[in-house]
Image (cartoon, rainbow, N blue to C red; front, side):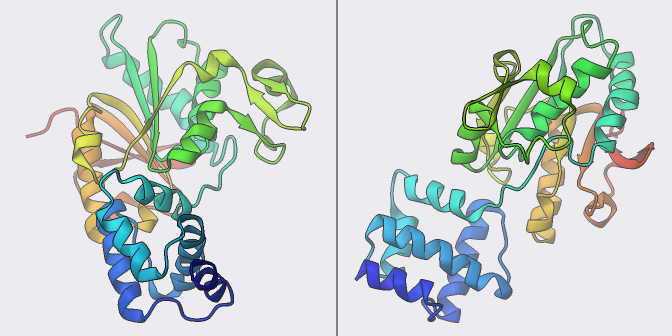
Length: 291
C-alpha cells in the first residue's frame, strides 16, 4: 500500500484532506517555524509522498503518527531536510559583503579589546556558499584580517545540506560569480567538473545543526558581532519573525549587526534595532547600550 499511496500522490490525486493538511502545517510550524500556505499543498504532498515511499508507511495518517511520536526524531529531521529549499551561490547579494569589509568590521574593530575575537554567524547557511563567501571577502579585502581572531559559525536546520557544506563541493553554477584568481586560490578542481573549497577554509568554519525557534540550540550563541540571516524570515509568520529577531538581539553583543535579505525589512518585525545604511544596503544594529 505504501507504493500505491506514493503513486497516488505523484499522480496528483488528493492524498491529504484539507483538515489533514492544516494539522500537518500546524505541526511543522511548531517544530520548524516554517509556515506553509494553502497554495503549497502540492509541494508538501510530493515531498511527503517520497518519505512515505522511503519509510514504507501505509498511509499519510500512519506516516504522520510516526513522525509525531518517533522518540529519536530521525524521521522528523529527514522530513525537515526534504521540506527546506536550498538555492544559493557564492557572493549572492554581494553589496552586503562590501558593507561587511568596508564599514561593519572596521566599526566593530574600533570597539574591541586586543585579542578579543570577532564573531560572525551565518544562519541558515545552506550548502555553505554564504559563510565561505564571508571568509573569502575578509581574507581578500579587509586589511586588518590578520590582526584579529575571526570566528565564523554557520548553522542550518537541514542536516543533509550541512554535510554538503562541510564537504565544500560546489558546481560550476554555484561559482559563477567567483573570479578566476579566486577559484585558483581557494578551490580545487575535481574530475567530475565540480570544485572543492580548500581545506584551510573548510576547517576554519564551525558548522552546526540549529533550529532558530529552539532556544536550547540557540542559547550558546552569545556576543556575536554580525549575523547574516538572509531569506529565512520570509518563510515565517509575524510571530515567528518577531521571536527570531528577539533571539538575534539576545545573541548579539552591544553594537552588533544583523544583515537580512533584500526583500526583508526589520521595521516590519521589530523596533529594537537601529537601521544603518552602508553603501547599497541597510543593515540593523543593536544599540551599544540597552536600557
